[in-house]
Each structure stands twice: as structure tokens, then as C-alpha cells.
Image (tube, rainbow, N blue to C red):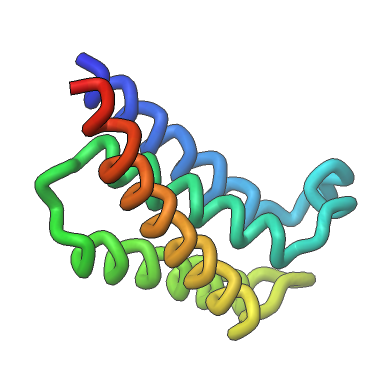
Length: 116
């Protein structure tokens, strides 16, 4: 049951990120925070939600899917007026994924094992 919750949360988060990444509307709350921190946080959360949702997926599959999603968002932004493609955003996405991997590993190693 908890996996279903995480899956719904994962897809909801994806939808919110797609909206924020493709909207031309000015969203002050999002713009007031450093853009790279937003990318980092989004992909950190996406990695954790994906890992809790689909535990049997390989780490490499999750990395490839999330990086492809990040590059796709940047490519779409290239064609949206007022937006642009940024390799630094993809780097921030990658860093969020890397820290997400570490956080999930720590959870599995120290917390999940303690509750068994």
C-alpha cells in the first residue's frame, strides 16, 4: 500500500515539475529561490520517490530515466520564449540524483535494517 502512495506522489511531483518547467507564467515563489537549488531539490526528491515506488528497478535505470527527463525538460525549454537550455541545470539535476542515491543507500543501510 505504501508503494502505491509513493507512486502517486512520484507522478504528482513529475506533473508539478513539468508544469513549472514549461510555464511562461511568472511564479515569484519559484523565481525567488536559486534556480540550481530548485533543480537539485527536484531531482533529489524524484530519485527518492522513484526508489521507494519501484524498489526492483536498477540504480542505472533510475539514473538514466531521470537524466533523460532532465535533458528533455531543458530541450523543451529551449523552444519556450523566455526560457533556455542550460547544461548547469542538467548538472544540478545530476547532483540531486547523486545525493538522492546516497540518501537512499543510508536509509537502506541504517534505518530500514533497524526496523526489521
